[in-house]
Amino acid sequence: MRKRIKPVVLLVFFISFISFLVLSRTIADLQARERQETTKTIPNSNTPRKTTTASSSSKKEEDINPELVGRPIIDISGWQLPSEIDYDVLSQNVGGVIVRVHSGAQAKKENAATYLNGLDKSFKTHIQEFQKRNIPVAVYAYVAAKDKKEMEKEAEEFYKAASPYKPTYYWLDVEEKTMKDMNAGVEAFRAKLQALGAKNIGLYIGTYFMEEHSISTDKFTALWIPTYGFDDGYYNAAPDTNTDYDLHQYTSQGQLNGFSHYLDLNQIAPTQDQEAIYRKLFKVQKDNSSS
Image (cartoon, rainbow, N blue to C red; front, side, top):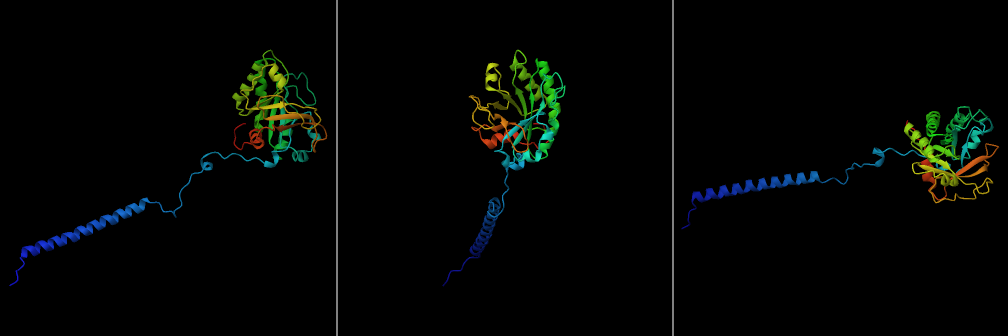
């Protein structure tokens, strides 16, 4: 005779079985949800990622014309008459131009190149003619004041005349002793020029004069040195100095198509990175700030 299964046992069995099914479904749902959350946090390799480039946040450096880098650099003044210059032709033969704006306080009377107030008679024409032909232009002033107060006045006149043209560089041409402490006078000129807004200020000076009068170059951002050698129109002598320099005036007897007389010719120091120094001295600013 078979034993009868008690109803209580069956009830317990069914309850346990149903509970197992419910628990299994719950666990399965939880696992599926976890897989979905994990998938959301893993980046899709096919989804483009956002990238940050330096050009989007920093100011893009202005371009220079690489064709100009290897050409001679000339410095001119009112003594090179605009009427005698073919600017179209000369512009094809130069990489940059440094134009005299102020001739110094030594001017006692007006001459063919200079007004009585010291301003060069041709600087506006020279600057405008080269700039409209996309030749970068820097400017210079001959430093010749007799005291620091006069040096500051010259600096003001120089900056007022030159700054509207946004020159790439302001140069101080120091060639003669006009006051007892010439170094203090040069620094007064430079400091005033900087205070007025000039950012790029260089010094033109011979090595002998620099050493004899203890002229400091520390606060200038560029150095321009004349050394002629045979002065025959060609480069044949490097400056005799251990001081780093940027620009070398190597002859006063240079000849270029576009002007029938002699020109001062200059080149970037052969020991320097040519493009880097050219960019430093002749990069044209596109904004409203002065150089």
